[in-house]
Length: 453
Image (cartoon, rainbow, N blue to C red; front, side):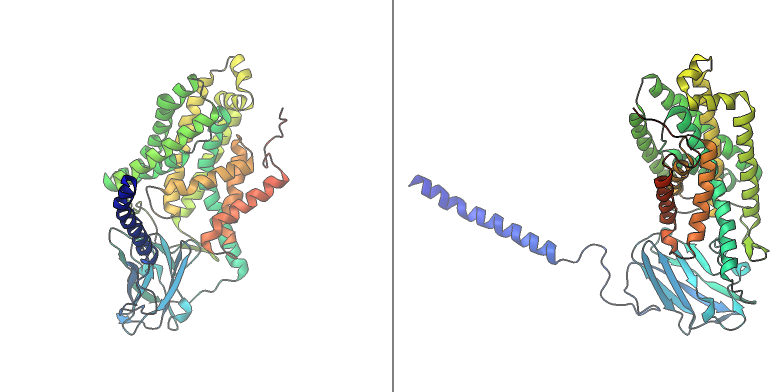
């Protein structure tokens, strides 16, 4: 009897608990998910779109008058949309989240004899490489970005397929050269220590941030700021080896443990950069808004300087490896560190020099990458890290010259592939080429076959 009484008293509590759980589950199931689009369209231009909290907008004018019926599109992060300017030249494009997007003006919808004139663009805007009316834009601190475009007179240039291939080959060569600077340094680190350094992307970011602080924030002369930024990259490499990697090597940590440490170091550095400069994109001084024409090829003087500097530095690294005693010792350690140590080579000293060199090369690559993107962001090196590893693997692990060859292939494939695939997928094209080549030659293009077991 007592047992029956206890059960009767407890039953209502369990009924309430179960009913509450069912009610909560129903509310969760039928509620609108976070970030869902608003049901009603806005009254402003772009009323054919689904409204979100984030949008780009502005006005298009020619000689002080609005330009209606111009088609403008946005793409990026798997999202695409387009709209048409109204009678006042106004437009608005909604996007699902605050990310970087590409805004494109369809010049075929502009009046005859009117073009998007780069000379009339705001100083912070420049056309995407290889285009005349596409711009990479992002959000600032607010949820909206206003872009007012002032058109100019000129002849609209249409490129043939051959011209487009040539333009993208040159852009790919430019990108491949600056990628090679970072990849060669990472390859030397791997060759001498066996470490796959996941923090190498942050070493690239460090160079760009140092240049930004020295030239823009502290207003040092441009040439002096760049030199000091490269020196700061070398100092970071020295500090990382002296303060972290050499003590860990002496403790006998394996390559897997060191790799995990590098992943943690990458995260710590990356979010430290974000804490210091925030999530905005900053421009380095000296960018040229007006490109220089070489037939169908449009290059700024920064592009020309970037390629020239990359070639000179790469030749300098080649001379260091082939023509100096330290360079020959570096190659000896890459081939057989135990034999090199037994031959009297100071392995720790050579590794220290390699870290300093890799830090300087990564810093220079970050500075050039900031002009190529364009802009300096706290996570810019992370975007390059996978491509660095792809170039090293493609060329052959541990060889600097293989990293150079792999970088050129990756850079050219990335840029040329945009002729046939969306720009959002261009990095995937480079990785597909990597997989295909490794299926044919697993050791990489310049790597050597090794017998296991």
